[in-house]
Image 1: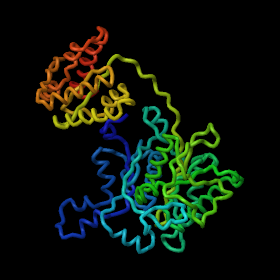
Image 2: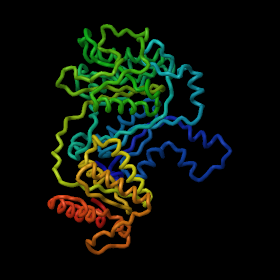
Image 3: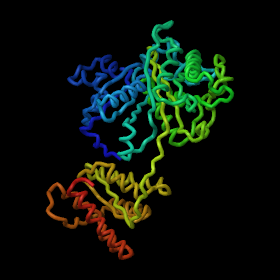
Image 4: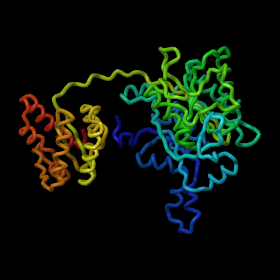
Length: 477
């Protein structure tokens, strides 16, 4: 669990795929005067550099532009940086914004875009790709370090590879042999049998020629890795998130990665949207592949093996990337100690923001009351949030009591009768603690008013005094 500022001054790299320069085009295509910040505001390097600067991250900070494979290339580069010791962890992903029509017009004239505005990957009616906007980032760490830190692990990168297609018919024409080679390299680097892969997140742009070429590359790769591979039954599903959200270009690869990670989490494979009939140029009989055309459970082919998937991303300039991801290991979390009460802490930079945060918590609880877990909520607010000067805390025994308190406070604030009780004195205080002290939640007063058992009342007093004392005077929990 990380507070927003936890990585500050850490050896953390930032690798971001970038491709379009629409914002720069907007700035330079008008008659507005050139301002001092124009240079930094339109520089590609500043996209990751600004993240590193804002959070004071000390690892490599690099933009990567290989067109549509940029963000998967960024993940590959981040893994290399961690392996070389350039950083201990890394943020890797990509961003794609569509702010001008320039590339829409250009790609349309090249025949790349779908005239129907619908991505139909592997379908016989596929007629081009659909541009999309989006951004995605994943945090990469060595597995042993993530386990030691108690992180939430969504998946394990087993292997990755990047190459180029070399000379082809044209600059943008795909090379199926090069695509096969990058897939083979990633799987060999992962050190796993190809038969253990049960899903491929395809590049799958939905172009009439591109999809068959990609399928041929997959067939070649699987044939090289396992010439005797079982072709009697289809065991490796194919899909592409582009049919759902469009082609995110510089962020396309990480979009596929995030889809696979969420599929691993839920152990389900979502269907390929807009799929009706297989592209006539593709023959799937006698191959290990099948189209995921319905929502289905994601099952390991051999039962005991972890789920594994490959993700492909191919740039229109010829740079190909492939990543192999494995299901996260099962983690046994320690049993949460049973306590009669829990401390809920809120803080913000202003009084108005604090009230807004209180309302947000109440709204969330109203929607998630049946599944909300009070100990985890308490731990997250204490350990996973920065603590600011405007603060309040609640000592409660269950979700119902917390909601009752929040509703009561909202009613008092609306009526203008809210009069915070002064914080009990724990020692010498500074003027900077005045507001925090004044907004101490009246746990003692509420405890006296409630009909609680002596042991619970004693625990409430102790929790309110000792823990909130740390919150106020150490400015941390």
